[in-house]
Amino acid sequence: MTDVVLRAKECDIYYGSYKAVRDVSIDIPKNKITAFIGPSGCGKSTVLRCFNRLNDLIESFRLKGKMTYHGQDLYAPDVDPVEVRRRIGMVFQKPNPFPKTIYDNIAYGPRISGFKGDMDELVETSLRRAVLWDEVKDKLQESGFSLSGGQQQRLCIARTIAVQPEVVLMDEPCAALDPISTLKIEDLMKELVQNYTIIIVTHNMQQATRVADYTAFYNAQVVEGAGGKVGYLAEFDSTEKIFSDPEQESTRDYVTGRFG
Amino acid sequence: MPSSPPSKRQRTPFEKGLDRLFEGTTMGFALFILLLLLAIGLLILVQAWPAVQRFGLSFLWTSSWNPVEGREVFGVLPMVYGTLVSSAIALLLAVPLGLGTALFLSENFIPLKIRTVLVFMVELLAAIPSVVYGLWGIFVLIPALKWFLGLFGVSFAGPSMLAASLVLAIMILPIITAISRDSLAALPPELRQGSYGLGATRWGTIFRVLIPAAISGIVGGVMLALGRAMGETMAVTMLIGNSNTINPSLLAPSNTISSLLANQFAEAKGIQVASLMYAAFVLVILTLIVNILADWIVRKLQAKY
Ligand SMILES: Nc1ncnc2c1ncn2[C@@H]1O[C@H](COP(=O)(O)OP(=O)(O)O)[C@@H](O)[C@H]1O
Ligand SMILES: [Mg+2]
Image (cartoon, rainbow over all chains, first blue to last red; front, top):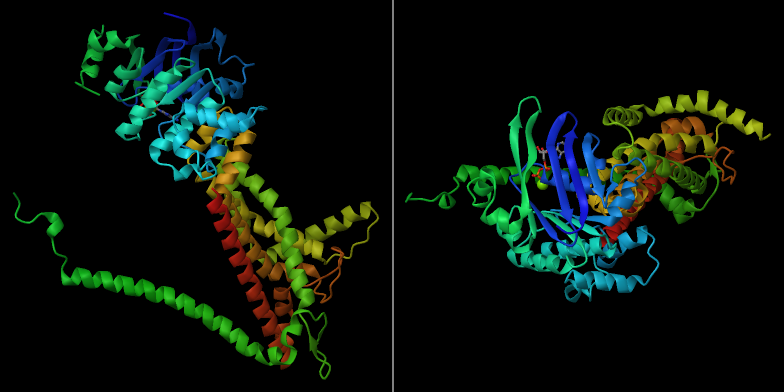
């Protein structure tokens, strides 16, 4: 494998006393797309949100184990979560534009992080990279809500890349989109990965095979005394291997659609 | 194949009748409210008519209120001034305080359990009868203000615009807090996460995303509070000094329209009753203007986002 950007080592993740994920160790390679697949509720989003400390917003959240970013402990006491999130951006399942104009949606991130350059130019390049520019260039001053779902999601991606993060986390970014918008976003990811490291959670097996270089299969099992199902990383390998010749029985069952 | 698919099922005449009955009843209720409102407005206007004929629009800018028989002059300007100024001061104090409280109670600064208790206490503020606020003003606030202003060598009689405005501010605080908190809490969590996910700080998120997103609810709450402040009677009567003059000093006594009505109706007769009714009509119109203004602002803000 090439450079490792993000690394989780023996991570247990709790919500209160409920252990949501146990013993996850994974290395996320630089400038590659890594897909997280697996049945619902097995902790894919939970792990993803740990990587940019978005779980800090949840009061009951607790992490045991170590997560590093370029070898640096993400949860060290002197690490500022705000700084982490500027480097590791996030795109959500539901498009969530701000109640602002299209222009201000993009300009929001750069402004709060003290961007001093040419904002018009940054807005244009961000929108161009998200393949949205041609559709919105004449209505930059209209509300972000005036766009269709697929356009809103590309707006959210443009907004994320406008702060020039190093990693982009995407949690089921196409779940609410039509097939055409989905393909557009997949093309976009393949284009972006030259400069960014991407992790995408997806329920769509074809999507994983189309875009991902590596695939992590998460599963969950009932554990007595843990307060419910506990998610774990079942298998992590190149996408090709996961889909054609996985080590685990459960992986094979899942990718061939026999459960999940 | 079933012979009649469910979509083709006919509604019985009884079901249709029930529907129509329901529609008619609700419309009846709605019309009743409208009629009630018109009736109240009309009644006030009819009773005010002798004063309207005698004083005309000059009632609005006349500053004397003289009920002595034979020399009767009535003008509502000092009370309009008092109503507007006391409400404006109350808003000025209560908006930042109420919005701040709402933010504190809708964000996770403190554990949920303590927050729930605090929310309950804020709502309790709204349940205190206004006469109790008035008493509190007389026995606690005014002595405290006397002591405080005394430190600077300012003499302070007690009943004044300042005392009334401060108590009004406390009275409208729960309205602003409760409504703002509700509109902030109703925002989709994705909005907050989206902002944090871009590396925004808590303050950045609150001031640049959450407040703009909830602004129409917040403005609505503020306007409701303003309506309440303009109409509040008992506590104001007890604290404002009931002096029908315009005095720019906040430490001087003043009066509001509703306080004027409460004080004078019992002993009024003839043209004075009509003048009081005229004043009441002015208050209704003022409140109406505030409401229309509020609606307009909310619309403007909604169009912007
Ligand atoms: N904020 C939360 N508080 C408590 N439990 C949560 C929270 N978020 C997720 N969980 C629980 O953690 C488990 C994993 O959830 P999640 O990471 O969302 O799974 P996935 O994304 O794989 O569907 C689920 O059982 C879910 O109920
Ligand atoms: Mg999920």
